[in-house]
Length: 146
Image (cartoon, rainbow, N blue to C red; front, side, top):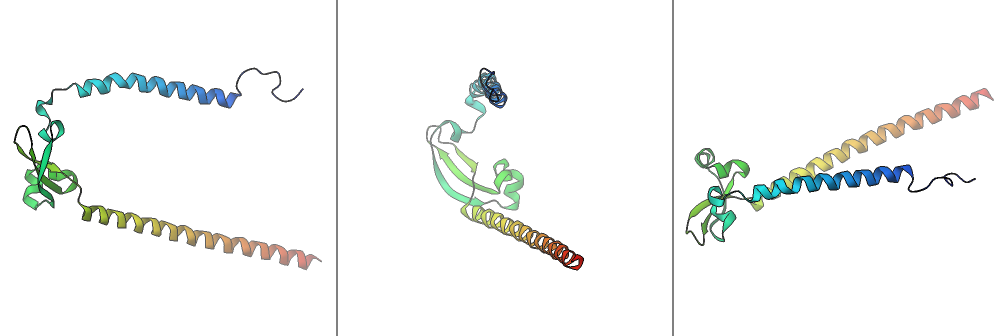
């Protein structure tokens, strides 16, 4: 009898996969009402730019030391833009990400990737040399034993 011929249904690994999928689905359904409750919070304490349309009055600029300490929007990215909400005509500040900051982060990431690649390339070269030495030693011992 071939292996698994007497078994019915899915193989054991697939049962586990379906069990994990069902558990994940139940977990997502359990979290959905919580997310709806968060959305139903009153909009009075939200900044106007989250609720209504706005126009950017001043483009994204770096925060000064004083602004960083006094304006909470500056603390997350260090850059802020001034906006005017259309309906309420409020002037507010909104945290933003500048192109210069993104460029610096990109090059830091690229540098880190190149650094890690160089480290692992060196490790591969060192390991290859060790293996080559072991192979040569093995061949030398075989030749000496003849």
